[in-house]
Amino acid sequence: MEKILSGKPLAKLIQSKIKFLIAQEGIQPKMLLIQVGEDPASSYYVQNIINIGNKLGCEVLYNQYPANFTPEDLLTVLDYANTDPSINGIMLQKPLPPSFDELKIAESINPQKDIDCLHPINLGHIILEKDGLVPCTPLAVIYILRYYKIEVEGKHIVIIGRSSIVGKPLANMFLWKKPYANATVTVCHSRTKNLKDITCSADILIAALGKPSFVKEEMIKPESVLIDVGINQITDKDGNQIYVGDIDYNSCFDKVNAITPVPGGIGSVTTSLLFLNLLKACFTARHINKSIDDFLNYILFE
View (spheres, rainbow, N blue to C red):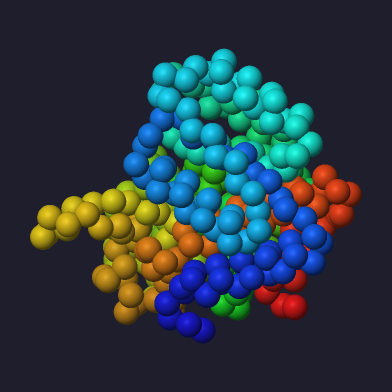
């Protein structure tokens, strides 16, 4: 087993397989990427999506709207995109302005074009173990564990964080009756008592709470596997802006069997999987039925 679970080679592999399938089918999947306002971090992520899309042979239609864009205006844009047959996937870049009802907006996206998996129908499919579009970050966790051949079945997985985009869907995915799942899952959060006792029992610990370097060496089990979903911008002792995860990487490194770095871990895989969801949505629109497992097996084992 590799000690450092880098996401970069996996992201490169995913992108190469997506590019091949796009060329093989002679298609150009089209994404509508929407941003409201000019959040600097979001703008950086948006540019990254556009660059990767161009490289893979996808079309990324980028619509940026001013901060005073209203929820009603956005719903009008979504209504058009939902029914436009040339648009295969819709990506709504977060954060939205505080006045927006994010659940209402998510419910207004066509579930078959919801490549960021915000719609309640797509989240419900995860609980029912029904094939569909899957949130990219939880799927990245599944992919990186399979890529590095880390056994999950029967293991105790502890997830710190209960968000609807990472913690909750990921917990349910690990409960799937599949060889790469079948885990025993505990979800911890801000109200969990005796947190250290629980995290120290984890064979695989996943941190997804958005607090820099929260998980310390004393909170982990020896020879466990640590997956860091967090990415936090902080100022180091020299006054430089740097990115760190939710796990204190340096203090935990020597105690564990494997750990994902930040940056260069889960985040690099997540963006690639956004385009896998776009490809899946495009295939579905063309009546080409490929399941999550079909793509997973093709990318990792063919």
